[in-house]
Amino acid sequence: MRILMLGRGVIASVYGQAFEQAGHDVVHHVRPGRTAEYREPLAMDVLDGRRGPVGRRTCTTYRPRLRETSEPDDGVDLVVLSVGHHQLQEAAAFLAPRIGDATVVVLGNVWDELATAVAPIPVEQVVFGFPGAGGGFGADGTLHGAVLRSITLGAAVTPSDRRGAEARAAFRQAGFTLRDEGDIRGWLLLHFVLDAGMFSQALATGGLMNMVGDRRALREAFRTARELLPVIEARGVDLARHRTAVMPTRFPGVTGAALGLATVVVPMARATLAAHGDPHAAEPRAVLRDVTRTARASGIATPRLDRALHGH
Image (cartoon, rainbow, N blue to C red; front, side):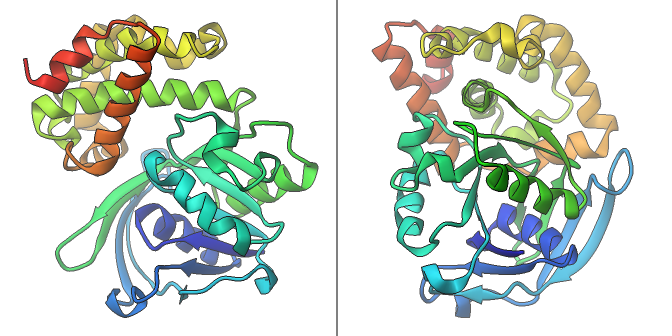
């Protein structure tokens, strides 16, 4: 399968390498002029959840094939797009005239209605999901991160057998297990407010990495997320359908304590938080801004989130 990864960031590099190792033909589309800026090969220090129940640290190098142009006749079968939700519409508009009929996998937070978020790419052409990976680049260019064994995928509308099958096959062949989500819209909106809870608390602690082992901070994050559930209920999300994902907000103290312990003793849990740095970066700021704006438009009070944003 010929796979196009948009960019050469953390998510694109981690999954791009996994696809290439599985025998796929992988190329990375980067902005004009960026090819010369990247240091190759890319050194990767990744805790890999596909390698045992608690993951295994792997130190490898990856030499991604970079290109600065893409055209519909390139023969791409699958496009993987993972950007901040505030960049998604711009990225979709860029890709639409360049990818033909390729299946598009969008990995990451989405807050707009799904069809709007990916326009002008037809939503029927898209499979949505969330990456089980994160990390950052060190001063020497090394990618430090972690990747879980599982990944969540779903579709805004019932995709053709080809769309769903292509997306699932690519990840399975690369050693990942798939969780198929029937209500991907609701799942993504719920994940968004859970992230908002975590990011709001990260403002107080100086970053998610500083929440490793901090039971109180994690408890407060889930309490803030609970405050935000009415925001997505107002958008038609059936929380009962996602009761397992909602559970941490129902019992924030217990969940915070359990997750706090897990981030200390479980390498994968620790690496997942430690992979995130500056809470003032563009994506956390955009998550907090957009959920606050929607809450206000719906007339829903969010005092905990407001206090976190204003530092009191």
